[in-house]
Length: 173
Image: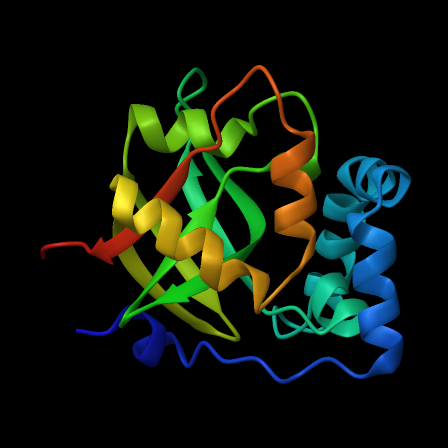
């Protein structure tokens, strides 16, 4: 099973406006602004489009997956919109939190329970997320630059915490 292929996970080269939006989003102010507003905007756009569009997709040409985890404290299902990086025949998730100081909650959820689901444009798969090896970490970081240059900027801004990267594997049935 190929997670990326089974989801139809693909992205196009961003147009000039989308590249401009990516540059803004990767700036310190843009990343902070999007860290506060994006999930609210994305929820609304997702509802209006039946889950087929996202704000990063529309504005910045970035392919976004919906990752549903189990809250480590609440036990409730939590869905987060994330850019995913294709690695071989699977996908990887980067816990950068827009380059902010705090680790995103979905990272802690996956560390507590790695079973999740990932959805892209109407297709949903059950997955297990595992921490990337050192070699995979480097591979994902290198691949991420070709999708969204902000990851490189985020990496230089994040201090005092370790960026977690998860590689998705098919859940056994």
